[in-house]
Every structure is written in structure tokens, then in C-alpha cells.
Length: 522
Ligand code: TYD
Ligand code: MG
Figure 1 (cartoon, rainbow, N blue to C red):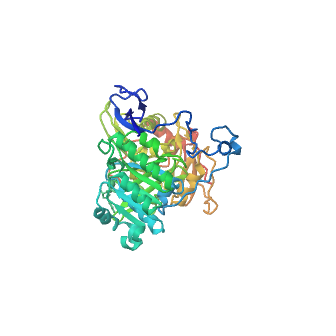
Figure 2 (figure 1 turned 90 degrees about the horizontal axis):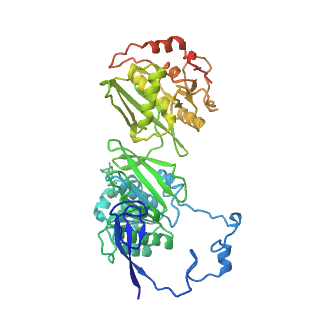
């Protein structure tokens, strides 16, 4: 008969300890150890298996060839092909690295109401519409509730309704993991979706759903299902107040892929981001927009240049998310505050970089912001952490301060150094070409950037004429400020340029050349 052994697992890090302690020695968390019983199979003396070796006793030669139990030259290990099955939701497939790897387990975390269940149902319907079988097990909703939502979703509507998908889209309102696994073994789905792992339980574990003991056992059962049948498993995980996945880190260790579903409560844009991916990069993101018929895939933001003049305090930037280039819209507001207690707030942007940019604008741009509140925001819930957004943020702040606008359809790409110079950023060519493809008329880049117009766009050669598809090279932030022109309609009055500001304008001539800036139109 199998014996049981008591272990203590840490709720925070998943660390395993033989006895209870007030503080977990692995992660230092206090009062985080929970008692947990494990069944121990009696092993015969001297029959300890080699790690990773099959239990059926494959011969030693075979093991040596596969590199298990004996070291082999890395070059002689046969290359493994990672097959991927696209789900049909291309933004989701992009984050996974091209599709679901058969036998892999994915964990999708996100705030309540962000759209996790919606995304999962859309993925299930897309798989079914492509001829695969998907099993959607909801421990939170009844099958009727699941159908009610599913009938509104675009992939289901496109397929002609849930009835048309037949038994390729299976739904069960079940929280018992044994029944989910049994159903999956019977119906051989390509994808099993469990919504959510926190409410799934095992009858033989005497702990509440969501406890560390239940999470570990249920997750292991589902990992076992994926590895033994080759189906993909997607688990929904709840997040805590600070945005981390609820439950032990152990859950994240057990699965192959951890995805985070993010978005601004006040915006319809949703972003799926890879946090961990054993089979691909975590740099990629998937963009969606929540609409009445579910999540629509978003390809990219466009630069609006046809509809009226640009607004003061508004600038566009081309930012990289993995291999993909996205256009971000930055808005700034500068308002009179109290000297000594001014507010500097950023949303979707790095707040320490904002402080640095304000200082550079004061020192090298001639702006007097000491008694001004500065608010900067990246629109649409897009988080931009890279320095490539510096020039756009600085131009947005200066535009808001002077009530001046950038030329229509302008995109600014470049890092601002502490000396006020503009520095080149990686993948500048891709950023510039993507901006032009997305409707930009003028792209401001640092002077040191080596970039030309893509061959398709007709170059305009007349110097000083900011027509379609131009690249304007700028040396310093002071020179970049020269491109701001008075807003045609504005609510605030333009502040009088300060002495240093006048110097920039006078000395800079057309483009601020006195400050090392130059313009070349290629
Ligand atoms: P849901 O997928 O239930 O979120 P989660 O599983 O992450 O808790 O989505 C909930 C929200 O999405 C809900 O507030 C309504 C909104 N929604 C839409 O706007 N359009 C839709 O088509 C659907 C299905 C939901
Ligand atoms: Mg849900």
C-alpha cells in the first residue's frame, strides 16, 4: 500500500521543506508554509531510476544515444523539431511563437473582467472552426452562461453559430479535475481550456480550491494530461492586487508558457504578453480590442494626418515590441502648479525617465517647468518603457507648454541624452519604415541614425518642404523644438519665450544649427 509523507510547501515560491518553519528559507516569506501530504510509492533497493529515463527500463545504449545518463557532444544530439499548431487567432499565435506546441501547458493570467474567458472561448471556437476539437471546461460558469457569451463572439458568428461547430467545440461546467481529465481522454481534443485553475479541485485533497495543495495537484494532473495525450492545455489564472499571478510561483514553474493579459480598464485595447515561454521568445505581444462581438485582432495604430491640425501636447513614436513595431501616441499636459510641490505623473511611460526629460528640457530646451505640473500619458494602454520614446515625450511636453504643435503626421524616434543630444536607437530603419507605412509624413530621427527612405516611397528633395514621406535628422533636443509651430486653435495662451528659448530660436536659424543640430532631408 502506498505510504503518505508530510511535506511543507511555500505559498510564495513553491519551495518544498520537510518540516514547518516560520520563514521560508528559499524566498524569505513569513508564515507561508502549508502542510501537504504526498503518496510515496515504495521503491526496491538498488532500482533507483536514472533521471529522465523511461520507467520501462530502456537499455543503456539507447540512453547514451539520447544523451541521458552520459554526456554527449552537443552537436551530435539530434535536432528536435518543435511542431506548432496555429489556433487561428493570429495575435494569440504570435505570442506563443507561431501556435500551440502539442503537449504544452499555458497559463493565462489577468485582472478580473479583462477578457480572459472571452479570449479562451474565441481560441476554442477558432480551433473548432479549423476542424480541430476543443474542450472548454469552466469551473466558474455554467454551460448555459458559456453558450450565451459564445454566441456573440465573432469566430462563433463567422462559423454560423455554436450549433454549426458540432461536437468539435465541447463545453463542460466542471470543477473536478479528474472529470475534466477523463473527458479529455475520451474525446481527444487538440486543446483543453480550463477556466480557471483557482476553482478546480481534486476530491481526494482535503483543502479548499485555490489552496496551494489543490493548485499543485490539479496543475500536475493537467500537465500529465498534456504530456501523455499531446493536447495543448490553457489554464486561466487569477491575479493578485499587485498584478502577480495568484497562488504559488510553483504554478509558473510547472507550466511551459505564462501569458499575461493586460489592458486599461478605461480603454478597449488589450495586450497579451509572454512572461515565460519554453518554446519561444517573450518579447512578442498580441494586440486586441474589446468590442461588442468579443476581442478583435488589432494590427497597428495609424498616424492620423488627414483630419485637421495636430493638437498641442501630442506626439507619435514608433516603439518595438519584440519583432513588431507599434506606433504609440503620447499626450502631455503642462499646467501651473505650486512651486516646490509640482506634480509629475506618467501613465504607460517610465516615471524616472519623465523626471530626467523635464530636467533636460529645462537645461537644454529653455523651458521653465519648476512651477508647472506635468502629466504624460501613452494612449490606448500601450506601455512604452524604452528610451526611443524620449524625443516624442519631450516634444509633447514642450508642445503642451508653448501651445505649439508638431507638423501633421509627424513621428519622433530617438533617445535624449543628458547633454541634450539626440541618440540613435536600435532597429531605427524598421521603425522609420513602419511609421511611413502607417501614415507618417515626417519622421524625426537623431542625426547619427543611418536610415534612408524605403524604395517604394517617392523621396521629396526640396529642402525645407515637409511633404510626404520625409526623414528629418535632428542633432539636439533644442533643434527638435524648432519644429513646433503655433497651434491654429488652442485654449491656452502661448507663454513668452524665455531668454534661453529666444537664444535657441535666434541662434538655431532654421533648425537650431548653433546647438549642433542639423537637418538633412533624404
Ligand atoms: P470576461 O471574458 O468575462 O473577463 P474575465 O474572464 O477576464 O473575467 O470579459 C468580461 C468583460 O468583457 C465584461 O465586462 C464585458 C466585456 N465584453 C465585451 O465588451 N464584449 C464581449 O463581446 C464580451 C464577451 C465581453
Ligand atoms: Mg472569466
